[in-house]
Length: 251
Image (cartoon, rainbow, N blue to C red; front, top):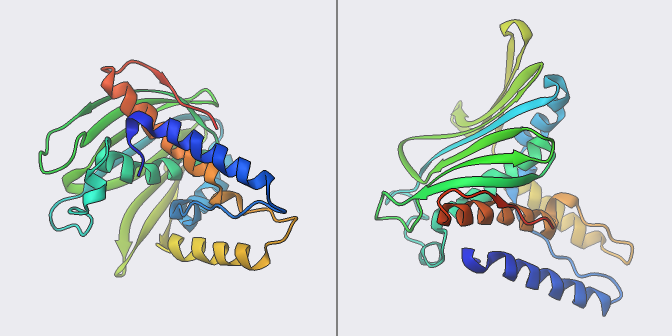
């Protein structure tokens, strides 16, 4: 995992190395990022619904995590051994979900960070305003460990709102997607988790059909992973600067 103070430099070095390697081979080697949120049906379907809510006015991502001693990832040493801790490790998934839904980039952020739970590496709380390239703004709030876990994305448009919330139904874990439209009407759908399975199926398909005209599935692109990291890196940097605005590195 990349340390925050050098995350962007290391990403750029990795990209440069890959591009250099690609020029010496008959075809580029496959470099895929296993980001399962880009393969979750909840986000794919929400993206399709975006046209129904009209021009986007605001986005909200609220994450109240459950990273405590009962969580199997709590004691993993490598997640504690870099600046940013669980905020960076977990946060990239939530940024990936947001970017997948809205279909545009986050251009700048202004964040405040704090460290309250000393059993976790710092920081364990981040509150950030975000500016998107489509002109709308929003918030990203993440508490690594909460007594009342909640994971929620909400996109507000002129004609309606789309909400994606993690939960369970009939014993299955997944996401509830709700489309709110004019007149107080709403429709909801539930999509069980299957992003890991879908990304692996896509990757196996890619490597089994690779040839000189190979085009990787865009959702597996290393550039997408770099863009997720860049957003969190900018938030953490802004937190160090007591909320000063920071531009997100564009790849």
